[in-house]
Amino acid sequence: MSNPRILIRPVITEKVTKQTEKEGRYGFIVERTANKIEIKNAVEKEFGVTVTGVRTMIVRGKDRTRYTKTNILRGSTSGYKKAIISLKKGEVIDLYSAI
Image (cartoon, rainbow, N blue to C red; front, side):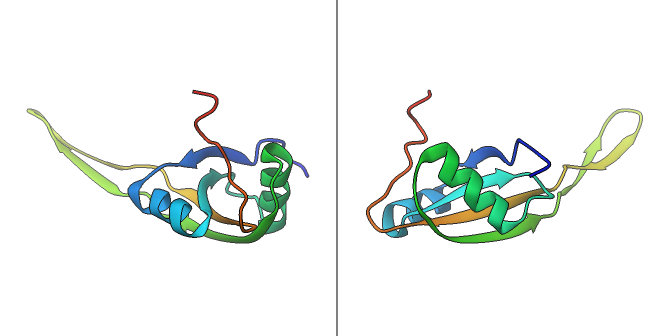
């Protein structure tokens, strides 16, 4: 494992929260170069759970345009890689314990 920081932060949205409650799935923003095996090992090591599945996707950045008095500024937000983790039945990750 060349990169020690694979899990960047959890994804906390309405959709992921519903998946967590119904199906035991959690979302994380991960290092773009990480593969599914590295992500699985990182989650199991950090949270002490059994991962049954990992789905990954690369989210493209959105184009942004801002109109100012003198100019039109164009740019985009940065893209990222997202992983959806499925856990063994009955196991949970407490994402709110460190808050």
